[in-house]
Structure formats: structure tokens, C-alpha cells
Length: 103
Image (cartoon, rainbow, N blue to C red; front, side, top):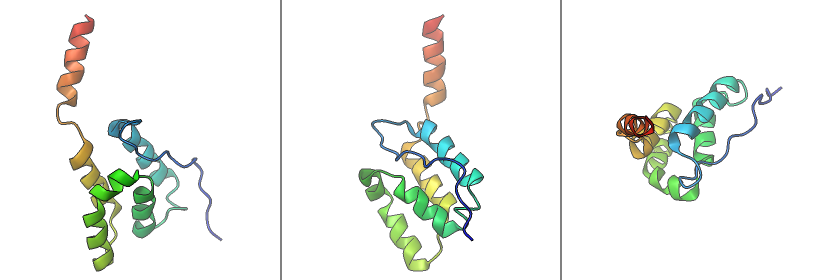
């Protein structure tokens, strides 16, 4: 018996259509709520990888290769790598600036 997913599959992360900061919480919710269906690190790793656009998959290809070679699939490390690539370190300042201009 294989548990079924509760949530619908999330959309692929395509940098043009989705910002990373809105896509990532959806991914985390999916992995948390459907942890019985996506039950191990290898399954989670490849679920995340398959939810990346091809152009983004290329950016994490070295990590995929290293992970495959060592057979140590770690979804948290993949998410950390995506954070390093796509997280905007200035987002708080930009939000404050936007808020200031609205006043």
C-alpha cells in the first residue's frame, strides 16, 4: 500500500512566472503534508528536482551529480542551494522602500 498525496502537485519553478519566495512555501507544504507519499530523502530530492524548469535544473546539476555519485540524497541541501541562487538578500529593504513610497 502506497499512501496517496493530499495536496495537488505544485507548479514547476520557472523564474519568469513565479518568484522563489512564493514557490518555496508551496514546496515545503507539499513535502510536509504529503510526507507519507513522498517518504524518503531520495523521493523528496527528485520531487524537488522535477519541479524545477530545465534552465534551473542545469544550475543544480553539479549537486545532482555529486548526490548521485555518493548516493546521499538530501532534499534540505538542494533547497539550501536554491536559496543561495534565488533568494534576494535585499528583499526586506525593497519591501520597506515600497511601503515608504505608498505612504
